[in-house]
Image (cartoon, rainbow, N blue to C red; front, side):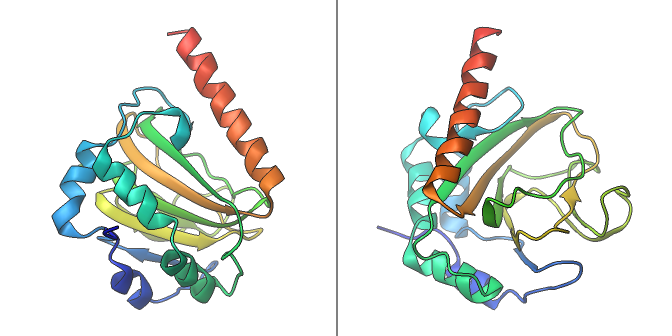
Length: 206
């Protein structure tokens, strides 16, 4: 299997700890493959998260998913955040469309040990919709870094009580993969059930 991730770039990216542990890479996918991966992103024209197993994916996109679930990628997360994820369940969800209400400031669930966001848009020209690493729960302007969701940009962070993040309101196509390492298989089953239920309900009301 050809690993399409730029593992050296992920390894070399410095860990930042203000206001919580995170690192980012502007181009985390090999340039040779990124266009094909974006082309193969499933058509998702509704808001919300979809389990990767509930959508149809093309071969280049599957190659990316396979590259994420490898010992090499897991080891990078272990080393960066001083966490043990080698044997933890991994959950992969997709978002394809941002609603005006999306992007509100939040932290991730305590059932998640680490979160990795990988963006798959051809480019990003909008001023809004860029993910912000935030210092607090109530001020979108109090941020330490802003991540443009361009072709293959990646943000990874350790889930902590203060891992506040969000983005200024944007409505339109905004494609991303969210990878979570979870505390238990039971937590994974619960998350996947609710994402799957949400997708089914949305399909009924189209």
